[in-house]
Structure formats: structure tokens, C-alpha cells
Length: 163
Image (cartoon, rainbow, N blue to C red; front, side, top):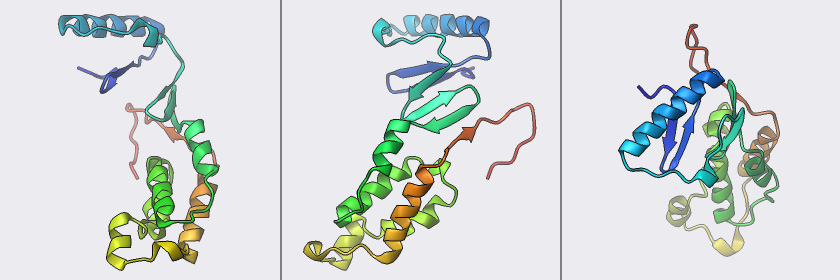
């Protein structure tokens, strides 16, 4: 029933194969929203867009990419000088893990700076030194984030393999 709608909290995306279908889908969704006494903020509505930013992703016909502004922020991150900074970076990069093959393997050295691990190992916060493998992971993730990260949407009329 909901093959043309994505919703997250109070954001809704209606997607369609062509303009005619799009108008039908909009009418259907608006009718259901009205029945449920939901109100739309007209100032937030964008209709018949060929690309849209949604939850940190740039969605176009057939592709999904990370929001370039979010990627820029990650790429411009300076090398961590605290365990908290190292962990904050890896958690932010993790949001885009689906674009990075073998993310968990690459990022593993940075995960050892999680608050629970730091507390368990009683790492001295005043004498923080980023390990060589964590430094390599940090720079490798930044390098990968500068590449053209794209997910293609599958053609559900054909067979495809999920990796």
C-alpha cells in the first residue's frame, strides 16, 4: 500500500515514476492525512522535485548520496586530540557506513575510544595519544569520504544481489 511514501517523524517524501503518478500519489496521501486530522505546513512543502535532501542524504532519481555539507564537515575534521574526539568522528562517519565497503573493519581502531572502553582501560585523558592504527583508520575514512559515494537503487523488475 505504501510503495510511494517515506515518512520519518513529521517529514514525508512522496516519490513517483512520472508527474501524472506523482499528482495521484500526492492526492492520496493528502486525503489520508486529512482523514487523520494532520495538517501540512505549506511553507515546508516541496512538490515535484527531481532531487531532495532527506535525513542527511541527497536523493535523486535512481541514486542516494550523502549530503555534501555533512561530508565536508567530516572531511574537514582535524586529527583527534582526545578519545572523545576520535569516538565522535567515527560515530559521525558511521552514519554513512552503507556507502563505505568494509566500514566496520576500517573503523575498528577508532571504536576503542568509546567512553565505555576508555573507562574500562582507564586511559589517561591528559596524556592522550592516538594509536597508529587509529590514525590510519581516521585518514582512510576521510579519504574514502572524499570519493563519489553513491548508492544505486535496484531495478525491482530484474534480479539483483545484495552485498
